[in-house]
Image 1 (cartoon, helix red, strand yellow):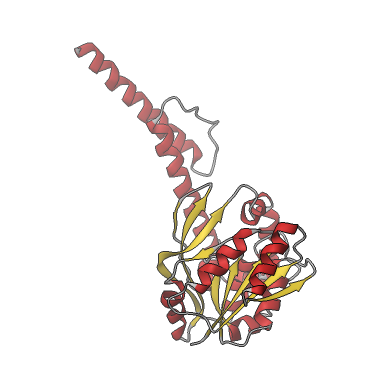
Image 2 (cartoon, rainbow, N blue to C red):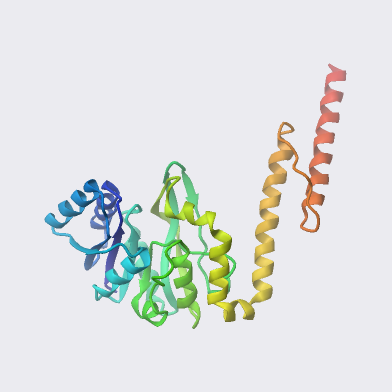
Length: 291
């Protein structure tokens, strides 16, 4: 199937040129490419956009209205049945479209992306899982840069332009999955995700609880229908993170033990850590005595 690419930009300097270059380097090239500038104001970013336009890239400009409005405008300006929305600070591996777009040959798939390769201030691979509606209720399970089925985007009403503080991609996926289907993830790190202290994703985490409440309120019927699944999945995440903390502080007695919490597994973890540290201390004492 034919794929259009929409790259969104806002005061991102050369990062946008890197994103566009990664699109142009695809082994399975898209049929359309458009950059939507969401009201960039700094001279360096405007110069980059002018250079891209002079190089034959279609560049649309709008007053600053947020990434949701920019993505909607870009998608509306293209006609292919599949659309890759790419953040202006991300970049694609050359095989991204060749590996990800075919996942939408399955009519049950409404969107698709891949694992993430972090670069910038952090490195590593992040493995989102995708899935059906129930898999998206307790957390987002797909990167914001993804190939969307245009018909599913339209049925969901597009991105919510009122959501300018984050979670707009999660909200869209919930809307696209409300009528069934699933989001597919290629199990390879084909999407380069730039990490920076001031990135939109990091900023959105500061407001995570308020944004989450908005998601729940907007998709209340789905949450009510799958309440037990959501609660168990949230608890599984909490248990996993508590286990990570427990392993870390058990291995390093120099790390302080926080005050134990009650009713959430925290007290049991505190006891296990104290027991492990005591056993390690006794073992060290016996070893010293033998020496």
